[in-house]
Length: 223
Image 1: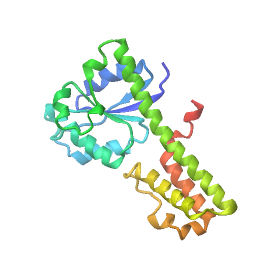
Image 2: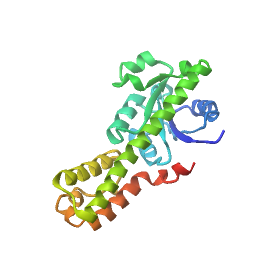
Image 3: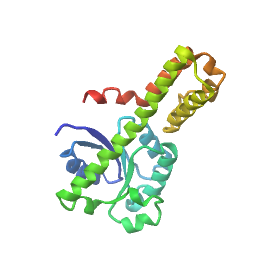
Image 4: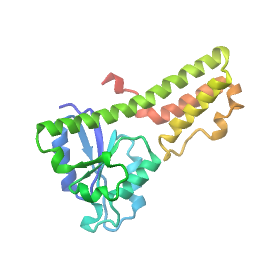
């Protein structure tokens, strides 16, 4: 089956990664793992995660320290990831849901490895959930991008009132906050009311900023 989406799977056991890569390949998912080294610090793993710009969803094993390779579990990974990329689709994937529920704030993101692959019906529901989460995130970005583009065009033609200016600034900030790991951002001063007086320059800066967020999505509509 043709690959439609890429899942980043955080698990210290490469065999586990390979197992679920095989299982999900049939449904159009490419599953990629991350490098684990004995005693590696938390930030070393998270750097890999945040540098993985080609993934559509993050799957996190809860019991990461069970093999004594690292000193942290999946709840710490999930918490840091949520703070940095709050709307990006991600789940906790575990063989001990009851234990994970004691540490993970959002219980809806916890999925049992065995339950999910119990039969074709449960696999189908799981796959549908993954796809829906990915598409919802994409649509969320595209909706905001469309409104921003419309406001910028209107501003160039006839100017924006104060409410529209507020909306433009708020929407740009919301997009920026979808990924707080980005180093190249539009500085706050660049989207101030004063800057909006030069709408042509603002439009170019906004488009460059938006492209940095959705660069890898530009050909999705052609797939």
